[in-house]
Image (cartoon, rainbow, N blue to C red; front, side, top):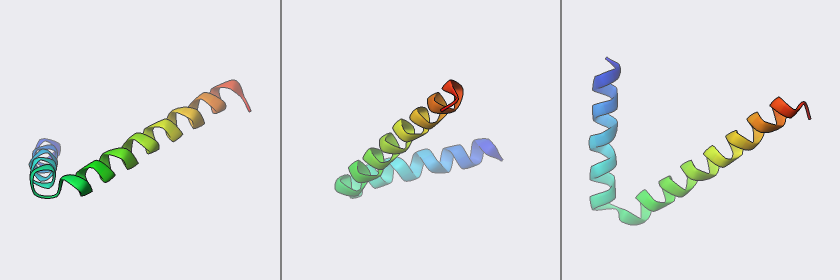
Length: 49
């Protein structure tokens, strides 16, 4: 089931990047911002702030 979901996500990502490149870049930038926020949050939790 997880493999099917992963496959659908990959296909949807390829379709989105081919049909709507601006939207795909916006989604990618939002994902990168989320990863940066998450890493900062985890690092601050580990430091005990």
